[in-house]
Amino acid sequence: MLGYGSLNEWLVASVIVMTGAALQGSAGFGFALLSAPILGWVDPHLVPAPLIVAVTLLLALTAWRERSAVDLKGLGWVLGGRVPGTVLGAFALKLLSERALTIVLGLLVLVAVGVSLRSVRLERRPPLLVAAGVVSGLMGTTAALGGPAVAVLYQHERGALVRATLATYFLVGALMSMAALAFVGRLGQRELGLALGLLPGIALGFGGSRWTSRWLDRGYTRRAVLAIAGLAGLGSVIHGLV
Image 1 (tube, rainbow, N blue to C red):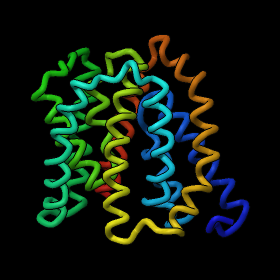
Image 2: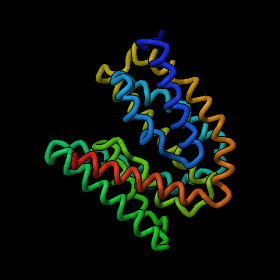
Image 3: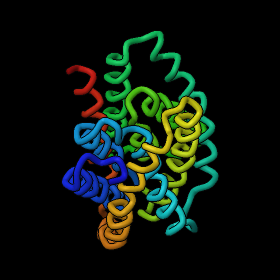
């Protein structure tokens, strides 16, 4: 069925993406952090192309649901940094070991989280937004974790702005990734079939996030952002050390 080995495999994959979609639809990011490693274990063919195609639906729905809250000005600066960061990441993979890069970038995220926990407010000025975009591009290219660097800058904003801005940012990145995968022949009929099988789980998770996001909006969004970012940074360091 749609390229899945069995009904059980499809059900497991659906539960994974449903949970990830609920997390991202509530806090603004975290889908890849939760879903990608586990889906890769269930079936390596589910990552990256099918997962990216499926998450595009989630990002589009989230961006549309809270479109009035998106920070377009800040988004422009971040995307301006993402492009050179992605290029630097590609070159860095050739010059340095992936392990070293993963550790260093993970430590940068942990430092940002640590500074935030000390109640130091990181102002969203253009230089810092561009820098976050560069780090995001580096992490996205080398460790598939492009979210934490940007999310930390928006931790003090209301939940709707965090979710809308990050969803729009990730949506642009996902479209770029799909174009690149199609260009190199990694996005074909099989990948689209597997992605189609993930869409019901994505839709259910997104639907559930309508209620969980309301709970986070009661003052818990910042804690959720820092917790997920911290886990992502720690996971990146551990991945590099193992």
